[in-house]
Image (cartoon, rainbow, N blue to C red; front, side, top):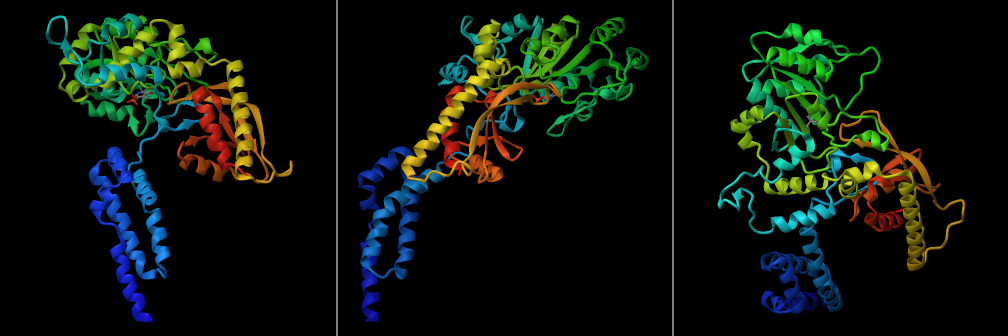
Length: 486
Ligand SMILES: *Cc1c(COP(=O)(O)O)cnc(C)c1O
């Protein structure tokens, strides 16, 4: 008996399909169209290898036939898994508009669609189509930025940290730059103003104290060696109580008197007066330039709502110096950023259009009625999905006391991204709670799902703040949540 089985098994190996036979089959050809020949061959071979290894443990030929029947599906699954992208869209139900871990400013579908058309194939990135000669990559948006901010000139580099480093390197290297002790801040991700100042090669002269710096402190510190006065927007924390800072106007007057440029790192560069949306007034880029600051730097992907970038606006004589500095070439933006910025600033020409189009502004300016309506729609979709899942999977209905409770609640969202410290915005969300609900477990499952949803847990329940969810995301979120709650 024993010998026959082994002999039979040896024959079974001959039942395994050959590679050329497999490649001639329609399902394999279809996979090659999607994934290409080499990955498909690798997956086919791996799958066969697995079946081959299983043969010694099989008892009947039927078992082998079953394994071969499952083989195409197995190959498909392997290919889908190896082809899965690590970089994914996630659904942000935290209510934090500028979430540093979630890519800061969300990108706009509309803007991306427009920009994609410009980026396919070649472009006039550095080509002047009128003159038929070399052009500048900054020419696409310079005039627009200047028109909106009121600046004489501008320059854009990779991010705001780079902008600050460039500004200090070009104007302060080997000389002294005066800054208040109250503004020697850490922004996050280990970006510290004092480190950047040291890196630029300027000598850091700190004046005043943590809570108080007067204009006289700057005046007394000025020497022959002083190159500039630096102001930093302390955008991620608040010092309250016995405090004082020198006003922009005072710094500008002092700079003018001594012939020194006043530089400002504005951090979250906002172009819109946020008090329109019921938030505290954050100085706008225009305010800073109007006060006479010579160079202002700010981020592209914070409150501006654009791509990662460091935008420098101000006096032409200083921008010219920055343009000539070798670091500028090392920090230059790519074509995606150039195209996205031009389109973004086009929409900024009309505030009402900007509020409708740019996701950050749309989220910050959303009215309470709008948010409440969206939360109610999310709740309705959720109930629908849960009911549908019950019917499909024939799950028995839990008694009232054990099932989850889904309600629309008021909550607080935040601007985030190190902007508007301590400020929250009244918002609406959907809250889910129940005796059989394990918030941490559901949160983890939603995070690891095909359509990852990031949310907050609150007092033993789940909270989905709808401020940071677009309408088109509601059905996706409802589906993911319905599949993951008891
Ligand atoms: C965020 C921020 C930065 C860094 O900007 P990135 O665009 O992230 O490089 C620098 N300074 C201030 C004050 C900031 O708030």
